[in-house]
Image (cartoon, rainbow, N blue to C red; front, side, top):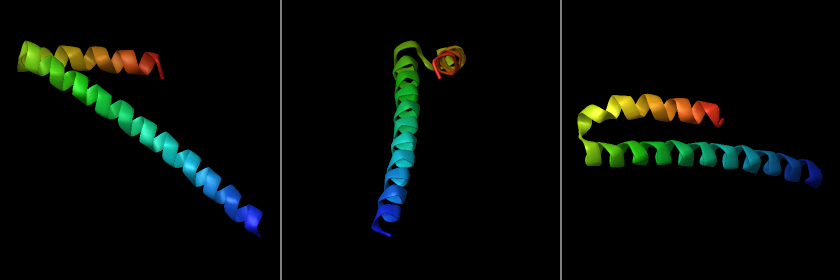
Length: 60
């Protein structure tokens, strides 16, 4: 019975790690966009957004 609980816990931890990593990636993307916005102004935003999406889908 104990083994089953451990297995479930490991599985949940694995899923949580995946979610945390995805969230971190998303935050990094948002930070990059925000930095770009501050540096180049709000009108450059759409261009960098498209480019970063393409970049992230390539490396997924």
